[in-house]
Length: 115
Image (cartoon, rainbow, N blue to C red; front, side, top):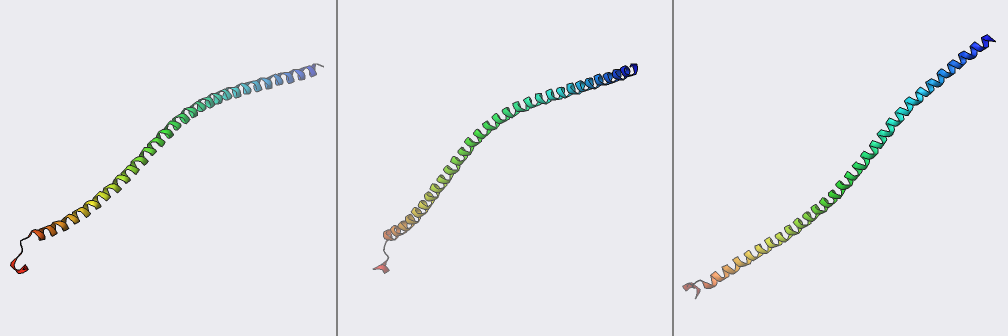
């Protein structure tokens, strides 16, 4: 019976040792879990901050793109109007030169050959 008691004591000691090792591994695992949970919380916060920044940048970008489109439209309209003014000026100059030529001819003294 003493031999059985000794074997039982050995089994008991090994069992306690195994349980202690499992508890130690569990504590280490729990420590790692807490670290990852803290990292997860930090990342979620960073994501919220970056999402808000991205939203502000998108809003600003949309306003600036709209403003640029307004500039482009205004420039195109102004250039088109300017081209019309140039064409009108060219036409006016051509008409004025023709009329000036006609007026000059009409006001020139007649030569004796013209009679």
